[in-house]
Image 1 (spheres, rainbow, N blue to C red):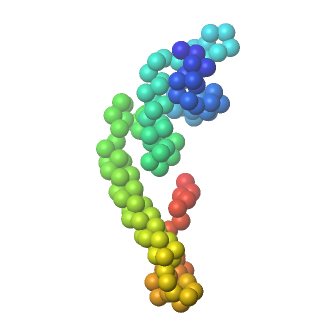
Image 2: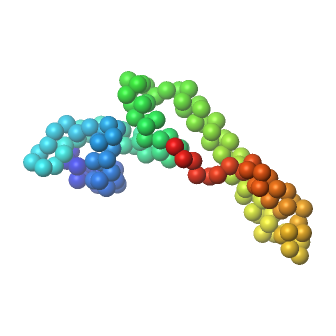
Length: 135
């Protein structure tokens, strides 16, 4: 398949495919004129990359799974990421519940609501982690 067909089927721009190839996540098996050619199995690898990035793996972690695993994905790494997601779900649930309370609170001002003040206190102490992770 040429790069345009892979792009169409994967719904990824060709620039992303070239970037993934540059990073060693996928590889072409030659060229037909100026167009890169890929084996059909690249679609499965792109699906794995998409899944990995959606659950929070960095491209470096995904690459190491491909190169070090020899076809097998590191199960311990998967369990670790699942644990991270469980913690994130708990954090987001607490945040959602706090927002719902703030929206429905009958106090004259949010700053008169004891629950809202506890939420602020926790946030002020840095206990509420940032939702953006820098890797």
